[in-house]
Amino acid sequence: MPCAVPDAPASGSISIPMTVAALTVALVYLRGWFRLRSASPNAPSIRKLIAFVGGSLTVWIAVGSPLATLDHARLTFHMVQHLLLMTIAAPLILLGEPVTTLRHGLPTSVVDRVVNPFLRRLRAVGTLLTHPVCCWLAGTAVVIAWHIPALFELAMHSPFWHAVQHASFLAGGLLFWWPVIQPSPGIARWPRWSLPLYLFLATLPCDALSAFLTFCGHVVYPTHGAGATDALRLQDQELAGALMWCWVTFAYVIPAVVITIQLLGMGVSLVDSGARDLTPLSTNQTALVEIPTVAKRAQLEWFLSPSHAKWHDS
Image 1 (cartoon, rainbow, N blue to C red):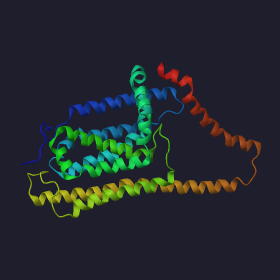
Image 2 (cartoon, one colour):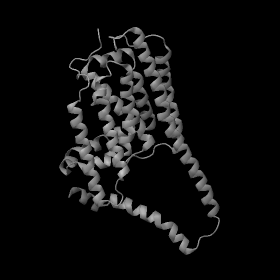
Image 3 (spheres, rainbow, N blue to C red):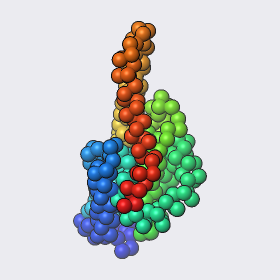
Image 4 (cartoon, rainbow, N blue to C red):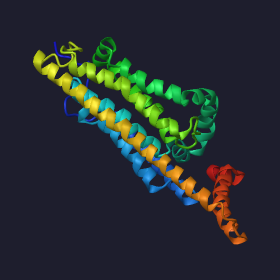
């Protein structure tokens, strides 16, 4: 019998709840972004706004658009869904620094009575969850666990577990990319040079899973796409595995290369500046060197000052 989820949306339909949720989150973020832009000397840039909106749109495409109704028919569409959530939506959302901006977009009463107490209680848990080891394990475990045949079939036949699957893909992606992007108010827990290795090691379990799906030679999920012939289902599975193999490799290796180039560039700059530092600075030169440091310190002190808290409460 064909693989179908009870009460699943009809093919080609749009999920109204997901559309409303995505629009609501985007509007709250936009409100917070405008409030910060109007009062903060170090407000989020337009690029952060574009990144967050792009991430929210990607989430909607994965779980609210007609694409979401096709993952029961073809394993390739299911793979596109989970790759969009974990490797496109999650990093774009984090690049938008959502914690700070969404907090300023909510009503003050909600922030004071709900958000702040909730964040204070979860501070210890959040510190543990955002440790790079936990983030790496979370992102890897989500991918492997949901492709175990028993769990995969459970999600395909239960609307509740299907929603849990989507949510865990997004949550796992957010945790995985957290140490790489380090959005505010996050603090670097590992040195920057460790991140290329962090990303490279994450490709290995995904490569193993995708290689198994591509080369095992038999249908792993027997009821998925059961309306098609075995040959077509195997071909679909091989395509899904190859897609995951290539997509994940580029999604993880490209940021690793970019970070490596940045680190090498910083090393060259430090060597050059060290050579220049051998020449004694005059009084005027010392003042010019100190100005950027003082400016950055003033911005940080403004965020931590009582006047900033009073502005948020107004």
